[in-house]
Image (tube, rainbow, N blue to C red; front, side, top):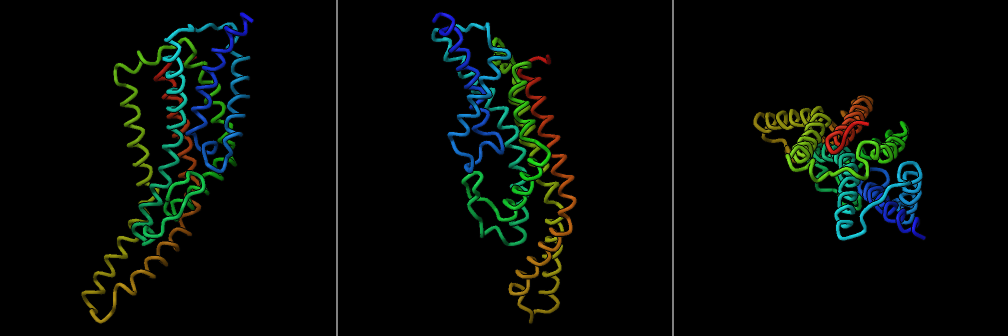
Length: 261
């Protein structure tokens, strides 16, 4: 009984970090994944981590245990948020394209997140998600949370590492980087559609008898979808670079909050 009383709080701390990670990380956090599955996979992964590196550890069982729970939840949320942020760059790029092409008024409900999302953004998000699963990216996410205990062990004091502001600076830079990636992914189509608007403006000035509003809407849709069909093979390379940046950002976050094993 004494051994069980010492090991159960350690297991709960491990379970807090892993369950917080699965709440926000891509693929596992989607509403299509049942909550019972998220809890179950968090429990079994926590069992694996505890059997590998949690046995023999002891934690204080007083009011400071609340701070330990907050620390573990914060670590899990930050790791998952980095992956979620990079995936949201894809939908942001789709939003830029939809505004230019005219689909911004026809947002749809995204079954993955449950929020209103742009049509092309949702389309590109699903393609990126399928590519992510095809390269076993979800396995890399599991490796990230499991091996995070080598970088940030249970006795690590994350709050002291946050005092100097390096963590806040890293999150701001990651947020800015996601917007830069979104601009890069949407730049070809946004530029082409902007030039289409310029051409329609010249048409309205040289031939006022044409109704530019009637001509412009279907023309921009045809140009946008045609260019999207042309650049789709190149999107695979962009998505691959995005995934590499996501895994590198996760490693940098672990290195920032802990120490390299």
